[in-house]
Image (cartoon, rainbow over all chains, first blue to last red):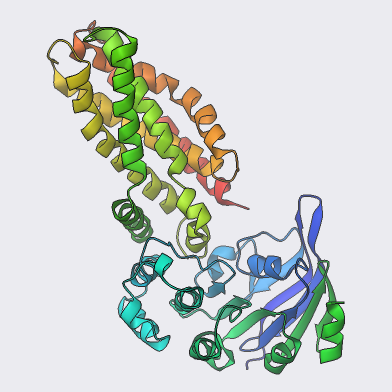
Length: 225
Length: 220
């Protein structure tokens, strides 16, 4: 784990029309560490990931990712971020291989890496089937391959193992898990599991940070009451 | 930028060849419209300005169908976000989408123009190159305007309403130019030499407008 903060938020604000989705959120995450974000549905977890992914602009406060200010220098960090959200960002009519080739072309990645990744998640034999014919768990595994295809420094993971059986979740561990060695921001609804992998904790409710830094399991559970 | 244009264009063409939706929809509409015109006009054949008008109105309305579908897969399947997360110039999406729409229009016309000639046209066409020039210049303009309007409308649930409302007024100058340029092919009055230049200027202006504002359409 390095000392320089990979992610630094100070007083971050983001609204959707009249509704404030993130309100004065501050947190710092060292490089190589894992930030686990807890909070009930609608707390602002996905919005936070989308701001960090440069898909949404901050409307107040400051946000720095890998030392670059958002949104001004967002273009410098695109390509160093991998986002695994609720949507797999894969075209249903294309195969896993074709989808990954599309993203490889966008990121300038050699196609050889695609086969290696598909092998790693146990999907090499189904690589040429359309995404619409794969199960949700398989689609999530392909989405994980897309997320790490370009070797990002920062992973933004929105409940990455929510649809996976234990074996599939284990297959993703080297790619997007703690052992990947990457800086990670992970949303979770599972206090015990989330705290086990967290270096830093952020608890959101109604867009506000109610827990920041560290927390006990009881404090995290309190967020959901 | 070439890399990103290539990636998006290849993907769009692959999706369309794998599960054809846009081109068959446009072509079927155009052929059906010619059949309807055939009965509605109560004429065995048309010529001159009327022939050019029937052809171009049909092609334009068919194009609107394609424009409305242009970004739907990107919106529904996360293609936009996948692209926005990549370290590429966002103008690449404009270029790739305009290129794919241009190719879809060419495919439409390969079906629709012969169908028009068989079903509605009276005299044999003369100076056919004029029609080809009009198709080329009009397709470029439709591709730029269509990509701009498609990107704007796809953000809204009312996109099927917005696309014709936004696109058709913008395309009227192009329609006039295309009819004027191609009417002589069908036995109509001679076209002034300025019409190809008017169409080319239209393409240039809307190409530049699309280039200038497309980035803003992709912002949240």
